[in-house]
Amino acid sequence: MTQMPHPSQPLKIGTRGSVLALAQAHETRARLMAVHDLPAEAFEIVVIRTTGDRITDRPLKEIGGKGLFTREIEEALSAGRIDIAVHSMKDMPTLQPEGMLIDCLLPREDVRDAFVSPHVDSIQDLPQGAVVGSSSLRRRAQLAHWRPDLHLVEFRGNVQTRLRKLEEGVAVATFLAMAGLRRLDMLHVARGPIDPAEMLPAVAQGAIGVERRAGDDATATLLRAIHDVETGQRIAAERAFLARLDGSCQTPIAGLAELSGSRLTLRGEILRPDGAEAFSGSREGEIPDGPAMGADLAEELLSRAGRGFLEHL
Image (cartoon, rainbow, N blue to C red; front, side, top):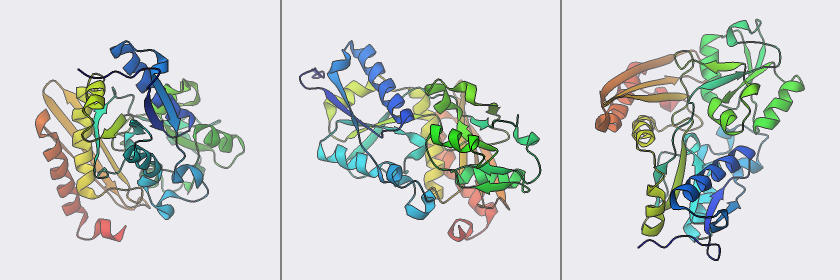
């Protein structure tokens, strides 16, 4: 019988300290409380500051990429200072450290990007040469490919910081994830969502993953009850695509898997950081074949892009 968390021995949930990260940790706790009929006191949310949170004045590609938002949290998980870790899956490297597993995914939120601007309604309405800010290499490359006239600048920080920069006139527009705005109850900030046909989202955008120690069977049983199977199937295909490309914060890669009955459709895209070249494609097949489809699509795009495309990046 699985031992349930108790106020005297609460399950410790590790998370970054941003408003959005805390919202995701609280969502995880709420789902565990509901499905296992547990009080809030049976859980303790532990905030861990990561290197990515401490260094905000330089692009991620200059200081190490995606692992900057997970390393310290995973170290705490490995050491037993926390029992589970809650992550935005789009921030996660494709390989977990030895002894760590992510086999619990919450139901996926809106995958789309949001266009955000105090004065402009859409990307199409941006004036010639307008300054647009984004910390995402993927978004900047896609925008440069679509609107090479725009001036793109680095724009790091949490949602509130980026909105303040817009108010201060650092840029006329930026992009945020619709999923994050929904979780923060801030949909009013968005001028509107961007159709994935125009801007394919990041791999695993909108998905929350819960990481645990391998061999911790009691925690595995607790988490299994809140795992969303369809989200897991979609993310498996997308991350297989990313893994074959060895994607990181230094590589503009987009990917989205969608389900229809027993069928899975996967779309993927790779770009040069300056947007000068973009290669996209798709696969459709049975859901269990999703990971193989992801790897196969990656191989096709690499072949079309030419030898050395990613090495050049």
